[in-house]
Length: 472
Ligand SMILES: Cc1cc2nc3c(=O)[nH]c(=O)nc-3n(C[C@H](O)[C@H](O)[C@H](O)COP(=O)(O)OP(=O)(O)OC[C@H]3O[C@@H](n4cnc5c(N)ncnc54)[C@H](O)[C@@H]3O)c2cc1C
Ligand code: SF4
Image 1 (cartoon, rainbow, N blue to C red):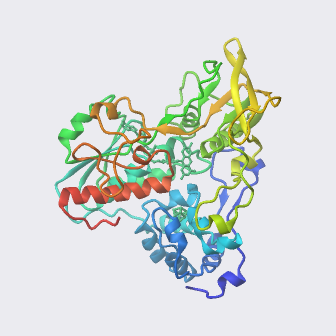
Image 2: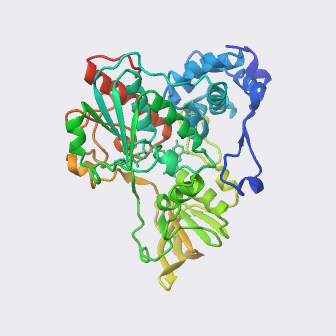
């Protein structure tokens, strides 16, 4: 513990955002780093608790108090070594993780947790700037071949771990570039894609081979991979979106969030920009149905495209602004969360159900809504209408896509429709086929995908070699 009285003397201070009026003019990141001194000062606030709840709150079990101490003492390189021993991609989580570690921090009992995510991001960014993050190729090859299907954070973390212990790893990705939802879902203003490109170059230098445009179960049979590889990891995410099957759903102008967001990400990166029927919010009244992260990303993107208005509807009641710490701590509390995108100018409505869409000339123009009580029953007399030229459905994902790869393989699914595999062996119902990330656990977070990718890599290594030096 660097500074024993740090938490008493230093107030919590976190990264600030560039003003909304500036940042909505572009798609770049807008979080302003604290700088070296500011970050060291914040790291000094860590109390190095006897039981570090943050460590458990973090799904990859980052050794947070240890690297806080190292940062406070100016040993950034050792902090990076420590951080990378538990997290393959701390510059991703340092940008997009909701930071359950901070909810679990003891100082959160006073509403002033250590700025753990900011410190994590600073360590990783410094590592790249200084050239400390380099390829770590294996000393020897095992002669075993592993196919990883899907290049989201789960697939990437698994591939990197497996390549580093000497397996020949091939990643099969249906899209033109790697990253999964990091690349095509999460907008550039939350995480610029150069962070992924850099990691892919590192992984290629470590021996990982990427095959793009390879849609397993669609453009190539999954069976081919089973025959050619010693183990196969399914890390294809949970891509089946929840639909809203109500009157007027077939009108033009109603789209899933994941039809809209990838188009903008591709536009920013210059990939495949000649879409025949682009979905754009410019000059439109936009309604986003669904109150989560994906909904927020639709808001920020719509505002940057020049929407006339953006309204977000959520069927759940408005959560409390502050949680009761004595009931919730150290767990992730249900409370009102206002994202940077909300601050950019969206209206938010809670306890609202959409009953039908209506339109003119086959295009949506209105949403018909009603307020609901706590058991989602419509409250008579509360019906209202909203103008809408573009409706974005962001109500989450129900499970992985079953058609194609999963049907071809005939794998057992769990009751929620995800690939059935436990979190020790990560083995599916078919020999030598493993599953990790959203494909196994259902829609989740980047940090959970990294954890599962790492743990599945260890399970695969054990399966192939009888034992493993990889951490769990
Ligand atoms: C819009 C949006 C915003 C989000 N924002 C955040 C956030 O801010 N923070 C956070 O922590 N989480 C966020 N999430 C959730 C997070 O992105 C996911 O939980 C995480 O990416 C899951 O990782 P994964 O590797 O399991 O799957 P994915 O990231 O979904 O990657 C799966 C990959 O597999 C590929 N694939 C699928 N099937 C096949 C096949 N048959 N053949 C070849 N390739 C295939 C896909 O193309 C994709 O590249 C967000 C999700 C969305 C949709
Ligand atoms: S990965 Fe997420 S939970 Fe873990 S330390 Fe980083 S911000 Fe916290």
